[in-house]
Image (cartoon, rainbow, N blue to C red; front, top):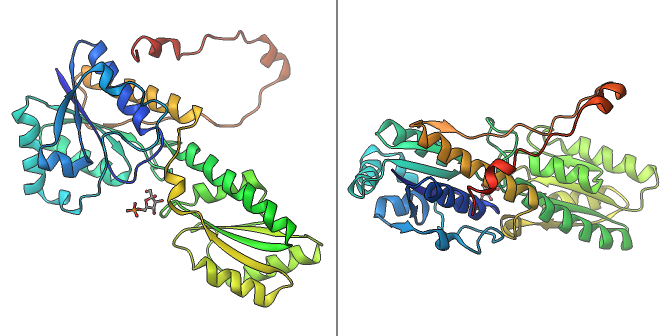
Length: 316
Ligand code: F6P
């Protein structure tokens, strides 16, 4: 059995950890592992190389993706995809793990219909894949955003300013609302909250009347021009205001503990599915619900060993 892996769309921290898990798990099952370089573009161009265990050494903690990534609009065309399928078939590969966002999922679904067993793994900082609670890369990007906003808070406080910060996320507000909560932002504006300038200015004035020395306003990208919003706030309140766009630093950096573990588990899971002959699936996680339980019941439960033990031997 031959299993190829690719990363596609916007890169995300933890993609390398996932590539490593797919390759190591494939080899540990006695199968051959292949890497497709530069996403679907590379698949179309035939950039496919056999990978050995050591090819994915020293990458678990590295940001970006050693396989490279791309966005290929024309992959929507069947003729383009057919070339990609032929490239895989020429090497005897009919299993493919595609790590990326929703565009990657659509590509995987289309390839699956064309006879390649495909498993999609959610890898994007945006956390905008509805079938999974969290995507690989989201928490690392969140940590980056939090770190940046914490730093902005220092200077915002010193200068009694209103600091407007634009956070990535494409059309999803998760990075904004999660970072807003974690940094104690006064106002968070996303597609879900809607953009109502009058209402925002009211909130700023309310904060001012409460005696707040400074303010943090987190805005999801594509909602508004943050420099213009900052100017508007400055013109209509007692705060000086400054805007910062966090931008692409949110995509880089060493993956967090959560992303490394999620990526490792998902990579192994994808190979297990392919081993069972299953294609056309998307891997997901569902884990962080908050609930409650009677105290006596909570104390009567025995600690179970972590299910991570079963992954360990597959990853080395
Ligand atoms: O999907 C990840 C992401 O960083 C989004 O947050 C952002 O909107 C987009 O990619 C930027 O894409 P590109 O790298 O093509 O400029």
